[in-house]
Amino acid sequence: MTDTRTATPTTMAELPALAGAELGPSSWREVPQADIDTYAELTGDDNPIHVDEVRAASSPYGGRIAHGMLTLSMVVLHLREIYRVTDAGMGIVYGFNRIRFPNAVRSGARIRVRGTVSKVEEITGGYQVTLELVFETEGETKPVCVAELVLRHYR
Image 1 (cartoon, rainbow, N blue to C red):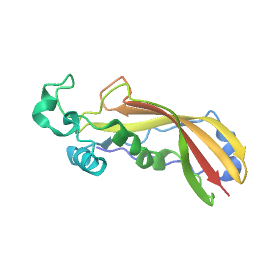
Image 2 (image 1 turned 120 degrees about the vertical axis):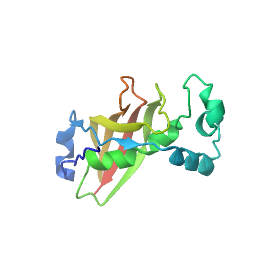
Image 3 (image 1 turned 60 degrees about the vertical axis):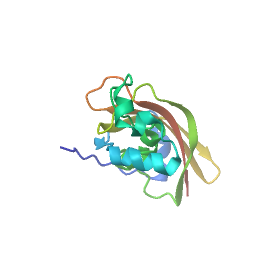
């Protein structure tokens, strides 16, 4: 069963007050093998740990796992549930300050994201927001990804 979460809408004027706010968690979302295979095809990353059932079975993970970058790219789906700026003229991903993959996402596992607004800085034309994100796998205690995402919201 998927739980649903809706972000409390935030306006540009309210962004500075968000510093320190906790976000989420988002809903659980499955990472099916079909998505892993599609990602491998699109990126050329066909490492057997991701796409070869037989070879992956003999790995320390005991089966196929998702690419770390696939997991990270799913952030948009999760963020839409837990973070939303309603009156920005444009929002962009400015980049990441830090990304780590301390655990694997096994094929078919479900992940979710929670986070903290660590910093809100005024920039020309808007705000830069830094989010400390933690990707969790259902049933696991160790996170699968921790990342510091930098977003920019322009008026």
